[in-house]
Length: 509
Image (cartoon, rainbow, N blue to C red; front, side):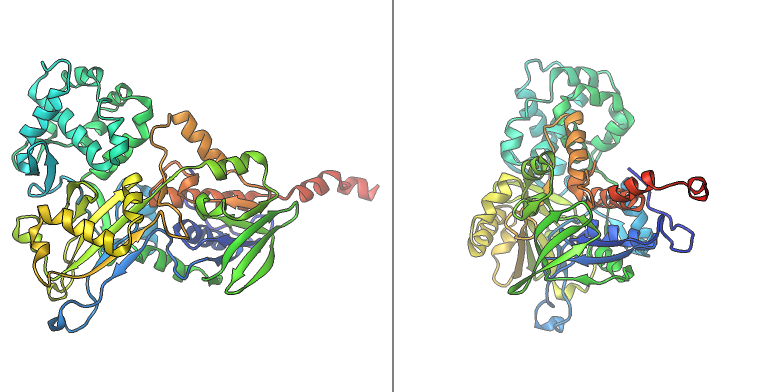
């Protein structure tokens, strides 16, 4: 992974002179690639198939609340990326560079609020009251229950975290993976410093694994990437942007001098020795554009539906074989933050069922405009199941299931509006993210390298080309890498010419 680029001094501001680069996709990867290439002196234009910029960062703003709210802008829901681990240094770098530091706020996640809920064998429990039931359920599945109470507490909360984050089908193949070897090691470590919560009956897994990296070696290798995401998603050091995550792509777009054109759908790519030819649908007509260099940042799920020529076999294989998981988010605009009266001040509940996770965003605006409840956040097959329903059916299922935990939703006039996005069914994404869970590190890296490998003048970026798939950090990392490659790229014809032309001494002779 390379650092953000530095501007090059010189008459052209670019090594070998400025290049003309077309970027496909105005998501975060495309915008960062354009921004960095322009800083190096290159000429950039961005084409985006949809009518939006930001890609899988999508902040939905509800209208003002009830009539007494005055009809002003209401609260917002993050229907795409909604959080940033503080350790993602590239993302934090751009937040600072774009002047968004004053918007950074804490993001409260699963199990961070003692009053939030999670399902158990005895029904919904508050996080603060769940430890005994979780430990009993976890210990019942162990061949040997002679562990210290702290060890069982650790295993129970790790299992609960995995259960909350993994799709049900994925968890069913994992719940036995917290093996005896791992627990035997944990049993010799003092867990007292990692007890957290008001009653000290939970375990801070993120801090524990950070302090004891050797423990990771006792986890099955195929769980390594998944465990990373579990720890990131349950960390206490996650942040958000106060006014919405879309501030990041909007601020980036405002810094780009070249044209950003929406409604320009690329439907074909032809890679040639000296150019990349794009077929672009503009309304009812299709035009051809010949480009010197292209950065393709769109998901491979979309790319593989196009007519692709000039790609080598290995590249076509990775384009067609890269797996994406869906994600579906459904947000309710509520008359009031009723969960606060239930003692919940933020964070998220693990709801189970079709709903899976429910988040309680902070009410940063005027309470008269209502509050947002991220009623359901699902990934993988769980998201696909919801996306196959009609919008009305989907909303009814979520309301019915969530009302068991939050009966206030059934009150007349409580839900003022609903917004959702099924990323797996969306034309411009056909999935939410590349998730390489279950793969060992060597295979993950091999797939990443192949995904990012250029095809002559065609370069690739996006979270699917990075070491941090499914995160904004990965999209940024890959965009910086692509900009580096273009900056130093020399076409084959130029290399041949340079190698065969006479030297100055030969010419003078």
